[in-house]
Image (cartoon, rainbow, N blue to C red; front, side, top):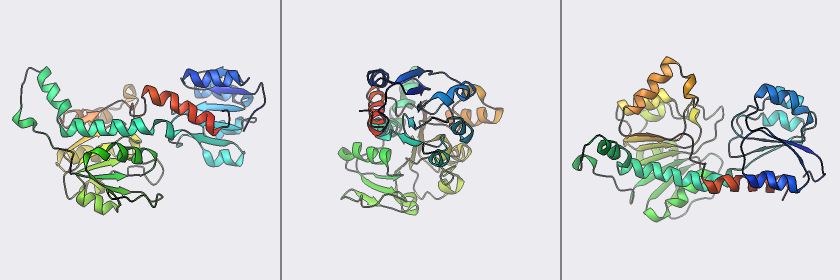
Length: 313
């Protein structure tokens, strides 16, 4: 990869100090702009040889066209939906991401959502805060012995399966690309098998044209059991209005999300506010602010993975 001195790298988001220190030690010129706007980046992108991004800015064809010296784009985290990788390839621009860096914490966070829902931890605490001490209505569902459906068996899907190893569960995994992953406790499954057998269904899909609103009305209508529904992937993989209907119709036993279709709450329309309020009215609904991959350890590891893939270290 690049190993010449004085090549310029623009960093468009907050990153671990390890990343900055390593680039500086290797002699690269850094332009650290963690809050830079799309318009401002457009004005200076032509001077960059490397670019570090997260999910804040869209690297579309117009931006890439302006990046006349760009050799690579490093995506801290997973998911390349905001980068026009096909157009970048026509410009011989390498695009890499670092899902290996935060997959463990996503797996652990997913388990946390499941356990909180099944053990009524979040809702019971809210009751205690309101001065209520309710026991019988808060009897838990044990995770041990259950069937878990994992849709998307890449980095985070397999990480979730790993943290489930101590729970004596049966895992039904569905992935249109992954093969040869079956073990005694992990079986390859169709969506229909997961819909009919799973006690927990967890989404671990990238956002593409194929997966947009993957969890829609038809998806929830297909459940034969009433599973707990979990998503720690991309917000638009789940149709928010379909999820609300699934809760209202008791097609699912609860829902835990780390993502939303629109995560800019201040920009919400009246309809979006109503949908979110509808979800939040259910005690068996949990929402965290896209932090599943945000552990202290992942913050470092994602930077390390990017540096390794770019051949900097």
